[in-house]
Image 1 (tube, rainbow over the protein chains, first blue to last red):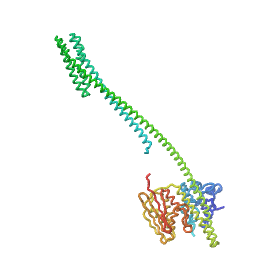
Image 2: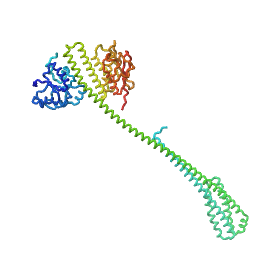
Image 3: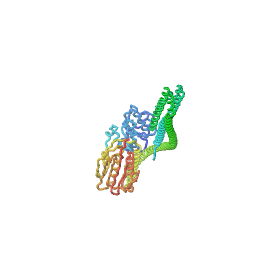
Image 4: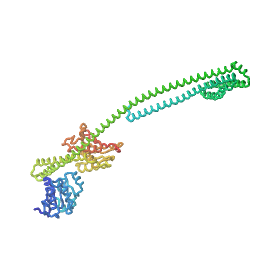
Length: 147
Length: 461
């Protein structure tokens, strides 16, 4: 079983190719062991709140950042975001939304759900660093020295 | 002459009113004339009455006096006294009634004198008789002087009567004539008016019917246009939604192609020979191109959809911004830029920025090979019409194909010569059209190109 203590990135992405590219990019920078990848919105909520399929996980072990794709099966990305923002225990978790276009970004912003940062897919490491920096979370840069 | 329905109705009413007024005038004139004639007739009649009265009185006087002379009986003087009383007022009346005719007054005077003379003579006789001079009076009578005077009086009175009757007849004839004339005039006037009003009424009714039909046809065609507009709007919206979702859905596999071919190059690069690497490069290049295409298409459709956010735009500053941004990605020497101050215009700043980016980008691209690439941008306000241009000294184009320039995906140079997907100018045209502006291009092979675009005079609405 994965050591959830060290989980720092929750990747919510249903497209296996996009997920593979993202994981590869982050793996190259030694973040792989810190990532949990879930494939739909329901599993994301279960994991974050420690219910359902992930019953028993400690909700207070919050991820340092959530990378959230929008078009997800079962529960939509925006609904996951809403759920995270609605609960005091999870409200402050930085969320980086993965969009396919600038327009999608405009639409999401119009919902005013409090997104910390946007990355236009494909996610490469540079985009990711910038996004995390924007989210005000510098642990990644502190932890890792660029090659 | 084309008259509007309103004018025709007004004219008809005006004409009807005119006819009424004319008829009124004619009737009034007739009445007045009749009244005058009636007065004259009345006077003529009065003269006849007076004449008879005087004659009768004079004869009575004469007869009465003669009777008295014969009988010496006072009772025979009764008529005499009556005549003496009746004559002065009768004469006065005659004078009064004959006043209107100047030649009558002479005759009236003569009659008055004669009557006076006769009366005096009669008075004399009566006196003499009463004094017992009966024989003297009888001789006087036999002499016939009194008779003579009476005869003269009768003659004058007769003449007067004739003239008065003549007048009377004339007046009556006049009256008849006038009345007939008036009746003829009025009748024909009324007939003409009636005919004209009927004709006018028919025309107006016809025109009104035409108008109503035209209005119905207009309303009908408006409704159809409205329906068409709705259908068009719906079709457009569907098309926009479709192209949006398709572009989006196309991006996902594209990411895969690009990302995985990059992984291939990275992970297996050392195992690939030059040709293998080239092949992978081609895959990535094509994927990138497709991505640009999709972006351009999305952009293009978005421009059609979104609301323009209008504001006063400083075109000079905007062109400068676009230039600076393009230069950041420009390889090689910076071309010469001549940027003239341009008038501001009311428009959507980000979209107009895109216009400059595309036009200047094109200019940069096509003048790249020149020894001294030069780009000139400027504009002027010609009486409300704002005109701008972007000129380059690059490879130009064949003016024969100018009309194809702005088509989506149209290219006038091969892909090998100049990279690009060909949506740029179509997008520029679309943006400008949404602003109500026009664009045209001039160019000749190897003599550069210039793009002119114009915003029409602002209409205050």
